Image (cartoon, rainbow, N blue to C red; front, top):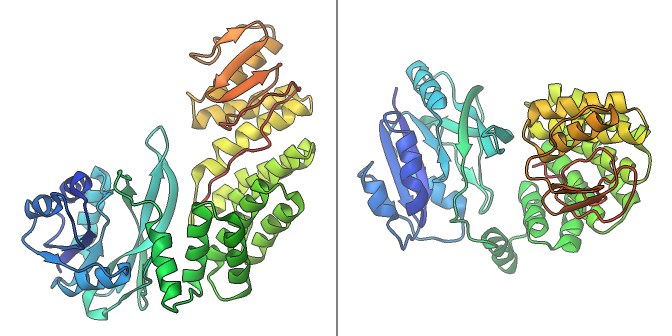
Length: 409
């Protein structure tokens, strides 16, 4: 059976060639719908396909994607964005899947590696409807954050599409589309309401976002979006210095499923900020343990069940005076990020406590008792330290930031 690639693009000259080159030889048909490029996007596309169509932009991503699907003739349709790529191993796996296509499966979910860490490993993963049988006539819905509405016989495959964001994203574009819809009388509801709130949140409109998230939680929506709303509310309340509301929002996320590592880490950080490292230990350990069960539950951030709770457990045990356990958790953190500034600093710190010598963090400036283990973090005194990219100016036994930022999407 045949497989087509369907894409919508605009001003993607810098990214499109990389995407199509990574998928070369996989697809029987490539369809490109251009929504108004003013650069060399079409010329790049012409190197790979003759099926290039103009689609007048109308502030509706679903409409553009449905148009691109309508131009394909293959048995199965797959979509990619211009800043996506197929790694060599995933391209091979996709070719193997293509060879197995027989019309019995209506839709395939593939893994989406939406971000990478400094080691090139997935930092944010989730599964998306990626390949559909054309005869099913599945359609895209949603002017922004559009999704394919699929049904029938659905299968999940461990094949990854990797996102490598370029410099093309127009800041505030999605929020403007939502606002124009509101002015036209289209009130977001369900999934659209959640993503409207997220756009408000991402653009720094916290108070309005909190109201929309709260209204969304009272209405319809899938469990993963409800959990995401709770986590976003907790971050808003952290910014607003409202610890009780922050605590309530995080606990409310448990109403929609098993505790997610993101919520557990956030609770651990909250209790640590409140001077209760013993309770923080419980939540950080739960984050580590729940990571074993959460990989295929919605959005998965390996850092939130790996490095992050481990480095915070190091800090917790250091505050509790249990330096042996603190050092062990620091080594577990280092197994995830062996070049991390905080891990290397802590190794040197524990070596000094034990009377041995280790070279501290590379490039760390040391003057008497002052060290600078990570950029933008000033540290005074001696204790274990997590890299939170925040400024620390107080002398204390264990200086961890009260403004630690956690991102889990």
